[in-house]
Image (tube, protein in one colour):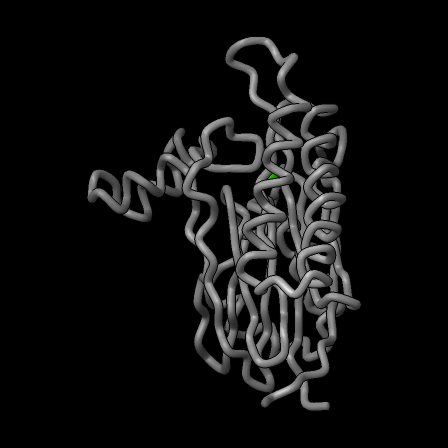
Length: 245
Ligand code: CA
């Protein structure tokens, strides 16, 4: 069974926004990593992503301690965070929504379990291959899958930021899709909010690990790059490097 030493870098920046509604978690006891991007106005967005960052690691820990499968632990953690955020947002006026995206990765022995709700993304960079592991739950991306929009049109669509699935959705019956993969030595896993992913290219992601082998250096570089390219959003990432023991 392959075991790894995980090296992790992380960075968040408020940018030009009046507050930072992004949260991240680096939990090296459970090998759990999370990025959450809150929405619903300044206070509510911070509250939603904060609830996700508090609840998800705690529920994963409880489930794993009770010997649940990683899949089950991740599903239950997302469901509990969803319920708590729906509950906290119940006093919101009609039409206002309080919620957060969540993209997470849980590493257990030789498998890594990735899940995402909303439009924060997970990418796997392996050699020259860059693969987006998660699906964007934006209306624009749903229109791409039906053929109504091209991926390029989706990037500029007003529906790009309208999410149909996120934590805080009252009706989320089918839960989150989980994307497991088997890591290899040298892999880089990137979790990031849209304030970062909208401002870096696939080529940036391909070259990054070669130019910045240290994951903290790469996380710093990616956030600075997005800000330099005029990201007007909060910008957050976690970089996990799978290294030989
Ligand atoms: Ca954002």
